[in-house]
Amino acid sequence: MKKILLLLSTVVVFASCNKQYNDLGDGLFAEFDTNMGTMVVKLSYEKTPITVANFVALAEGNHPDVDSIHLGKPFYNGLIFHRVMDNFMIQGGDPEGTGRGGPGYSFPDEFDPSLMHDKAGILSMANSGPATNGSQFFITETPTPHLNNKHTVFGEVVLGLEIQDSISNVQTGVADRPISDVIIKKLNIIRNGSEANNFDAVNVWNLELTKLVEKNKLLEEEKRKNRLENQIKGKEKAVSFLPTLESYKSKSKSSRSGLKTLYLEKGNGIKPKEGDNVLLYYELYDTEANLIDSNSKEIEESYGRYSSDKEVKGRYSPMPMTLSPDAQMITGFKEAVGMMRVGDKMFAFLPWSLGYGAQGGGIIKPKQDLIFIITMVSVQ
Image (tube, rainbow, N blue to C red; front, side, top):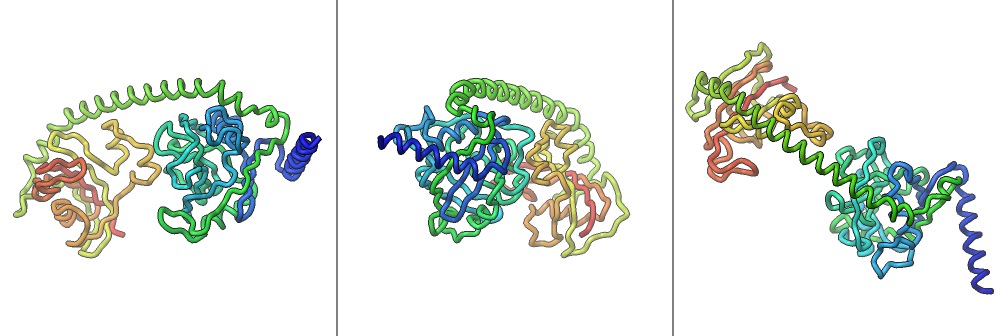
């Protein structure tokens, strides 16, 4: 009799919870009941079914692959938001509360082109790299486009966005952990409508995971082929461009420091003075005409080096630089820019002593001579 009463009580609570959110319309929702208030997230089970299935099965305590400690238990109940960064995101879902824990397994990324980190309240998977998703998630406070196609978006806050904001404003300590715990007291899954009610998280996980793994293998193979093609494109471009750079060098004039420069285009703009802020496009090559770096999208595309991530971060745009002896730039670059006026385009050959020196730096080898092509766009 007690079991029957308990079952009836559970059904009543669930029905009441569902009724509370009927005005949200059909869909699959997650209710985050925290010690700072309640947030409701609409889950994108149609576009990211495996990620949602993983989350729902963990929340409801029936995930088939969870470790034995959490088997048969609602995974998220009682966990904390262990990492909170104002104007960025709040992160939770780690049973250890350190950022290093998980459910005992990992699974691949599941990206959908229509789901982006483009606003506050986006629910997305936290990971430590490709195909390392588990139980950890985060909710954004601001648009974070640099996370697109790196973290799987699988939902969006539809109620209680102010709670996310409140959580993001708590006082934090080491590793951005809140001084006072922000606890997920209970994470309830709400099903509105027949489609959401028919979404069987365990079944979706069991049937679709293998397909996602195979799909991602094919995508990785395609990426590998693209990388190889771009490497070949870059090498061919370097071979064809090398005679041009050698011609520029032969026509260049040397300064007392050993810097060799040649004006490729003469501008008629103002000559900036010390302390001015200038905007520059640059191309950096080694002496074999291999492109090392550039903030010109066109140049990087010609070498098979285009980066969508770089574009999202706004790095295909003129670089600001202050004309000053103290500017954080290598000596030869500062000297070359100091000779220019707005509209100038300059070839500059830097002997290693005017570049990164005998020690090198990053991908620059020790005692490596460098070539820059610099265009001064404007003075700010």
